[in-house]
Image (tube, rainbow, N blue to C red; front, top):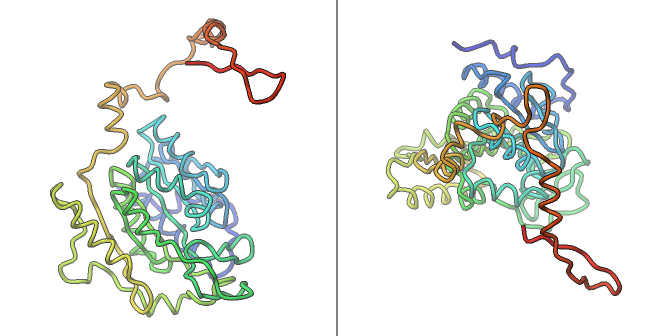
Length: 327
């Protein structure tokens, strides 16, 4: 039975700028969690630095506000330690595709069961409107002294090339549509990515609410569009079609599901094949101490073994040595 979305909201004052697209994203997230009846104790929202980084503060679930660009590795560690958890990453386009780009690619390769929601404003809103990795070359927003001189990264193409098995795009002001995409992404078993086009009324005077209203169209309204991989033989064809759609930008911008492959094993399932009992006894469930608090592992014995394996090795600095371990 669905819950009331307000059960997933904290009492903290939401202090984003008036008209910010983050309000729509936050509303959609609370509604999606309520309709999925997610257990707050088994749900984790992880964020990095930026306007989107405040999201965990406003949701009454487990929240981790991490470092700039490092939300995905934090989330990966949480999920692999306890695969029972529902883990959702919220990050800006600068956070995830700037300093965090390597982690973004790695998550797709591994297909870890995590949902990534990118707050895509094309600018660095928290640090006064610099061009972000998704702002096209030649576009000049209000805080830039001249047109952007760098090419834009296409988030959907990067996600598709990296191996994400659920790839979608939404509009922050279309809350009902965004909520449904979030529900499908969270239910998906594997790495899921939603690029949320988000107006920034404070610093982006080019990609405005009015611009998106006139440009976006839903893929589900496109006759014959089917992003779902029904058979492994369709994977390459469906991914290439998704990439072609992802290249559309300007007067017509598609939103909706670009690619959905539920057939590819998740990273957790691959670990289960390798370790045998990983899902039954993941790290979070393993005992590390006795009932009276004594550690089960003799740390001193481990240190003795480690010290016995140390081999002196010459360093490049005259008169100094370092040690390296073959372990």
